[in-house]
Image (cartoon, rainbow over all chains, first blue to last red; front, side, top):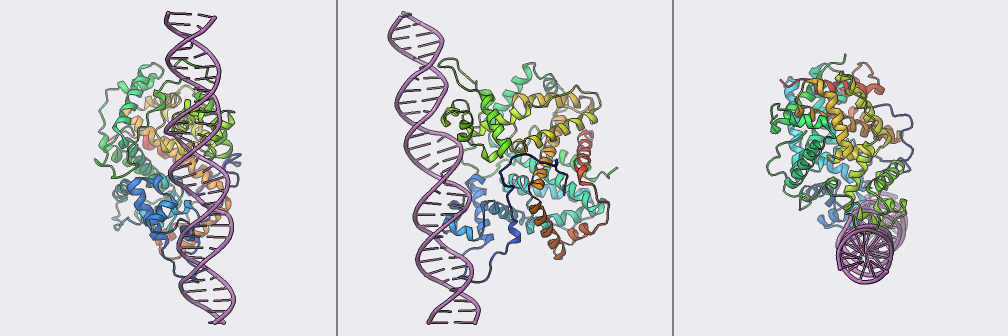
Length: 243
Length: 243
DNA sequence: CCCTCTCTAGGTACAGCGTACGTAGAAGCG
DNA sequence: CGCTTCTACGTACGCTGTACCTAGAGAGGG
């Protein structure tokens, strides 16, 4: 979704100044003078990724990351102006793991492969979908991904803009699915609670269509293939030429 | 996306215990004895919604909400066991604003209308997409929404399960779009920075396909209709019968 | 009527967060 | 060598969610 018309006045409030995110990729890592730095953006990001993988995204605090590096907390601010930017770096660090294979010319098949790669990445780094969804995320490795995606979708005949819009859809679906999968995995107890609540709601009579859908005999729809089935639909939607 | 196969062992770490979310909708609001309570879940949620609308989701803290109600901070914990649950309540409070019109039988048209209603809601409450994406969100009003959606999609001929999977796709796309729209709106300065960075990246030669997509003459693709165009694709994907 | 028991309101306190600011010292340049 | 510029990092502030505790309101049983 490369661009869009805002509702003219988006909303009255929001964190009073619209903030100046100042892309971290635009500021140079070092300036040249002074003593040799003991760390680097990537080493810091890598440490943060390790922590997030092991203990979840909430465990990633500036103090925690600094401690993992044997550094003082405030030293990190020589590399990363704000924590927000550390998250950007983490995202790109994770995205670096992609290993792209040359496009085969079969757009659909290539997209299915890419989609599965992406889901695997999200499973390896459960904190990743939340980050991808929260911010655009345009590091060098994210650009490599975009470039590969564009190569893969080149045979579709769609314009560059249309393919970028489609990429947002593609990414969005996969991250959303990965996120869902995590909450589903998070606890059988929670899952059980939810099912109980839903059936109770369905039986209350307040939600007749929900009850009807519950009662539909239809094929059970193997949940293990839900991702593949929906991914297929998404790709269809992506590749449908604009009318 | 009603259910899925986890990757057997989802991930080693995560916040050590998988947590027990304990749906707030399952615990009764009051027990009956003792003094008359001065507030209610909905009044608290409404106050939180007002704050989030005016100053963003980050401004919603227990102290802030309590102050807005003229209550002591800790009093809120008599209504809401954890802040997490307050967010659930906020979500359902916002979703209560939907005003559903009877299905016309034209599935596509009804979905387009519902989609626009949802986008409007997300614009009115910019914090909403983030919440919807982050957790399942199954309050009474969310159930009303689901029920309406099921009524609208009944003529599609798809099974209940398939329609639930499709709903996840539908919701996910709209929230994602709304989220994107916000960041795009957030600052022209940021937008400018990003465009500069991207063109610089495209010109660097490292991303040939990105450069090619940039150079594609193709029709400019009116950004104001990006939502409608993509929503149309998404609905197509939803309604395509399973092969 | 009063006693008792239960529930609510709210204060205090704690661990942790992001980060503004200031100081000490290392390293490159003239 | 001295100057300048950078890095490392300690301290401190205001904020967060919330565990725990006390005081008192109000209904139920005798």
